[in-house]
Image (cartoon, rainbow, N blue to C red; front, side, top):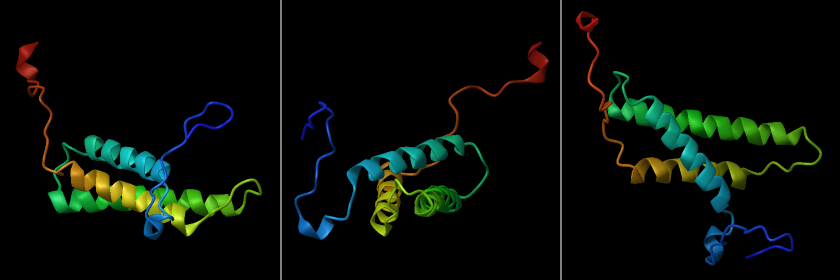
Length: 113
């Protein structure tokens, strides 16, 4: 759907059971989760621990942003947005396969110089 200003808006899911889901929030927080996953890829943690850490950080950040909106008169905080954030993070992590991905760069040695 295109608004008067020509800005393309996110597609709305037609199933009324998912009317609360905001695709824009899901995409944004999915991207955040994948960024955190990438940042933590070389840490020595179990895969499940890393997945839980990334998910909790992402959902926690989204919750803080929603709580912050309570104190801003021009913003509206909703549980639906917080849930959309969590769904986006979870789906992105699940689709990424959350396998251990180490850096493809060779390990540096102090003997090279």
